[in-house]
Length: 230
Image (cartoon, rainbow, N blue to C red):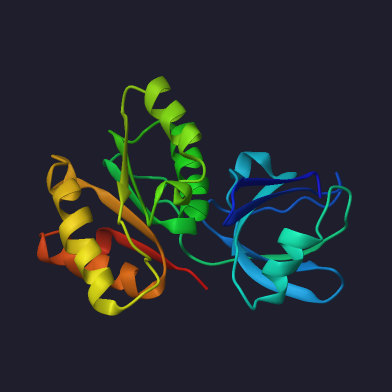
C-alpha cells in the first residue's frame, strides 16, 4: 500500500504499488480482486490508467456490515501488503473509435469511468468527452476537484455534476426519478448524443434504467457499454 486517502467520509482511495518484476497488465475499465488482512477479498474496478501499470488505484465505499470495507476504513495503512488477482471484465474502451464519448458515473461508478477517461485522454482521438457524475450529495462527488481540473485543462472535455438529493441505493421508483428527472435533461442537452459511445457505471438497477432511457432517446444498443457495481 503506497497510500490510503479518504476524500470523503464514505469513500477511501487505495493506492497500490506493484513489484517491478510483477506489474499488472490490464485494460482501462477492468477489475481485479484485492485481498487484504490475509483473507478479506473484494472485486473492485481499477481506477487508474493502464499507462500506470505499477501504480494502481481502487475506490472503496463505506459499506456497513462489510468486513472488507470495515478493514479499509479502520485498519489498512501505508506499507501493508495486499494480494491482487486479475484483470477481469469487458467494460473497456473502443480504442479504434473517434466518436464523441459520454461517461455516466453513479457514485463510485466513477472508479472504472476514471480509468476509461484517462485512457481516452491519452489516446486523444475522441471528438469530444463528456462526464456526467451523479451522486446523492456533494460528498458523493469525492474527486470533483480532479473532474474540474480536466474541464479547465481540456478544450473538448465537459463535466456535469448532478446531485440526486437522496440516497441512490433506495427504491426502484426513486432511482427511476433520478434517471428521468435529473440525468435525462442533462443528456438531452448534449448535441453529440446521437453519435456518441456511452459508458455507464454504478449500481445495477440504476444502470439498467439509464440504458433503457438511452435506447428510448434513440441511442443504438451497440454504442452503450455498462459496468454493474458488485
